[in-house]
Image 1 (tube, rainbow, N blue to C red):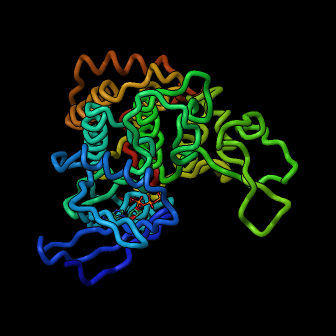
Image 2 (cartoon, rainbow, N blue to C red; image 1 turned 60 degrees about the vertical axis):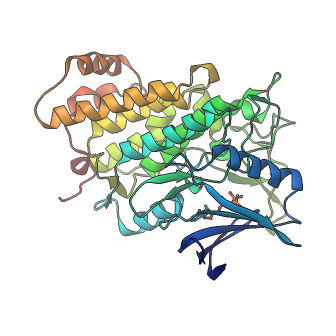
Length: 381
Ligand SMILES: Nc1ncnc2c1ncn2[C@@H]1O[C@H](COP(=O)(O)OP(=O)(O)OP(=O)(O)O)[C@@H](O)[C@H]1O
């Protein structure tokens, strides 16, 4: 029934193959999970969630079939020809340089809509994904996305599972809190960090090697005993080092706007002004999305993420209102490029003028609104 198997990826729990399905007469993806790597409860959870999600939503990678043999569980999934967004961006990154970034021929705003639409659909069914990240967002050849890997998903609205998801994309409360965390609000955080990745080509939170007896001064590692964010022994051969996760997380928690400015926005400004940027922190991205060429957009999008998605207080995270604001930015940008400015956006603009994405360097607001990003990062059109 399945032939021409070709390995796509080998993840921590599974190996994924592309295969020809003779009955459906199309390619499918086979996610093969060795029984020794996954508990029956785990696979049954993923299976149950995928069944509940069904095949209706165009931006959810649906399950076509499921079976098992003596050694493996096998999920038969819709096949997404262009792989995941993480790999896609790695390829694009290699094609660009600081002076000449590659152009991504996909609409950023469409991708935002599709991610939020898929999650909203799941949330309405009571399902939280809990592992939103670029690796789990698949791309079709038509340039649409499908949210995949529902292995960490849950139907519980409140969870005390502090060992789930991918550290750099996890909301602060998932590392440990008294009454458990709201799983749906966690997804909003994951979307926020993912959007930073999609815009700038790197996750804002990073791991670092520190001496085995060293204190992790910045992250949660040294202070939290129960969470998986705690510094863990590195698997590297160097036994005198350990990996501290999210070492710069604390800096974000203290001052999110300043952090994002320093990490992502300042490098873009530096390149524009011909100044060196601190290469230990963020770097300018080596690509631009085709519908995202204005520095004004970049600043607003960062602000919307910080205020509505990657917001420290989980109660303040709202995917739907972030979407309204994202749309306003894109509408404003279109009007702006056509020489018009709509009134509502003037107010919105006023909010940003007084706001502090810039860590005291607020000359990056209105005066530069009309600078095209390709100008800023020196792209010759
Ligand atoms: N339906 C699909 N079509 C195309 N590629 C896919 C598909 N499903 C998964 N992949 C590829 O395989 C990778 C691993 O898949 P998935 O995340 O589901 O497995 P996993 O074992 O849970 O991985 P990990 O534990 O490392 O997150 C994805 O990042 C993607 O590149």
